[in-house]
Length: 495
Image (cartoon, rainbow, N blue to C red; front, side):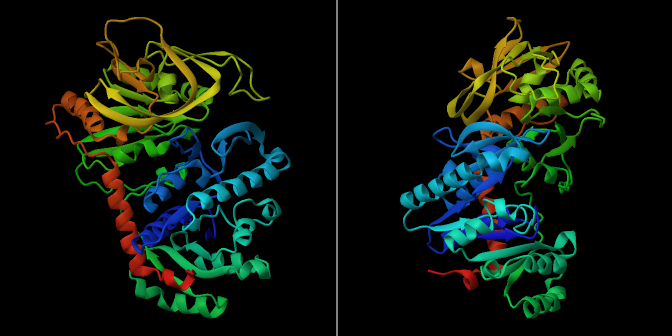
């Protein structure tokens, strides 16, 4: 099990590195995180919802992701409220203060069931567990589902990871170990210092001090990697430093307060000619070559924030200048004429209980939220901007329909419900889709980029058939190459 001294210490990526390292050794690793809190979700082949970090770890393990690997998923939606997902299915919405009374027992039951099914499915596997946040939040320890309770339940060998980039690494480690009970402390078999910048030899005396003081071996010091790996949290997006020396087009992505599924944009980050600029409500939109409205866990609240911050007016002005705007899921819904929430899915006790909301009116669609969430993988033909086969997944309550049959409307896919394109001299090209993961598709992504390049007078890029999976494999292999060179994993392995 990989535990961290704090959130953001790098547990998710180190867990993925361990999974790939074990796979290279001929083992059969299976990732598992009992409870995750994230709006960056993914849909498995059976329509089950799970956190993207466990999906990435499954890919690192060389196996198909299944929601059993993340049996409890909490999706924050503001005002101390979260949607509760058990074994891939939504079972309710709860306030933070009521969560443990209402969902602790059923959550642990889901964790046990997920483990049992995984072990039966992969009987010769080695579980690689990821903890959450810090394992020693003293006010939460008795109700902790996914750290020490799970580690003790499985007698897991635990690795404690500390982030030296943030400073205070000695206090992180000593403080965490001091707050562990004796039986819990015995589970810690090794320490990893993560995200070290500079000459590793400068920390050799630090390693010696940690080992002599804690009596726990330091497995190694993991250097800072310059490659852009998947962000573990939406806050990490703003900390990403652009490394591209000569990008040719700039894409502004709206950093919504309730942003979801931000892994949709990893393939664009990997394109060498593209600069990504995240724009928060209140920022200046500027004059990018394209704007993306991403998915949202709270579409109506994010839409209200866009209007109240004047970003709505900026987007409309950008469209009138024939700008290129693309919306995904909730982002597409916001671009439409109206949104209706008859079941009050996004309403809480502090809301006005209004049902119909005005959209940005840039796409001729209206959206109605229905009670049943649609979760499924898709494989189908695209019609714009290229004719190619695309894959992705749907994850939405909203159902969108055209409000008029204007001349310049084109469906993006053979399934007309999945997305539309609207183009006119008064608004530029405005398009949207319900298909998450659309940019993973190499031909489609390059076709979309070439639409922007053509409008800017740039030469078109080669249309590639390789999907983002190849780039992702490169990143995983790069990660494990550095991991194996610096971390002595053998010290904590057992048969």
